[in-house]
Amino acid sequence: MFKTLLGALGAHTAEVETELFTPGAQPGQPVRGIIRMRCHDRPVRVKGVAAELITRAEREHDDGESLVDMAFARQPVFGPFELLPGYPLEGQFELVTPWETPITFYNGRHLHGTAVAVRTRVDVDGGFDATDTDPIGVGALPPQHVLLAAVETWGFELRHADVEVGRVDRIPHSLPFFQEIEFGPSPRFPTLNQLEVTFLADPHGMYVVIEVDKRALLFAPGRDVMDAIRVDFATFEQVDWVAVIGERLHSMS
Image (cartoon, rainbow, N blue to C red):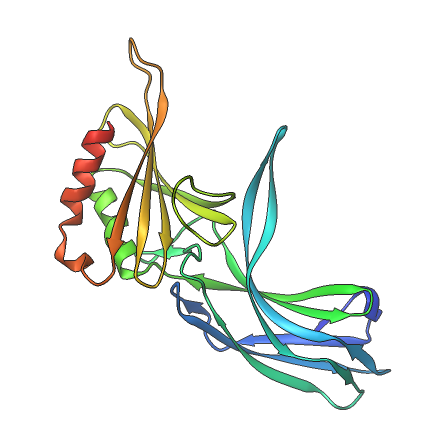
């Protein structure tokens, strides 16, 4: 559906439509689509049109948290040009999802709290007009699926996921945010209140960061404990990940 550009272009002057050919992807895979533009009553000068991926992330402040839209991949589509009445313009694009893209689906379930979308940006005099945001599904990579299933095998129940602005200490990654997938407590690990998993992937493998919230005991206060595992995509099928996760959890608890 065409949407009217607002702001610097003036109402009812130009319209844009984005159609996705691939409504879903896995990290590292492309999302393809086409952007169409048209105008009605007068020419419009456009500096450029681009497609980008965005996600909504939590940013911490001294007085609480706020939600911000974070762009993390961008592909120019066309421009500069003059859009003339009666002469619509269209251009195809291909956005490669970064390996660290937050996932929104695992094992056929939506990860509530995480969303990823394609957003069209049109650069005109007076600034950007963001338009026509289209959500996409990002499915878990096979190794991510295996690791999450291993956590569930140990009795932790998947709750939700969110994206946080910031960096993970001592783990290399390129995006200015990271996803946390949260699980509720397991009866097999009574000293743990909850568990969070973060994936930081690259073309060859991924770091799996596990953070647990330990309950306060008689002579020990409650605290967070973190561990990290490096997974090699080429050899991950040769590893008993249920056993590996179990060993790490027993050590952390």
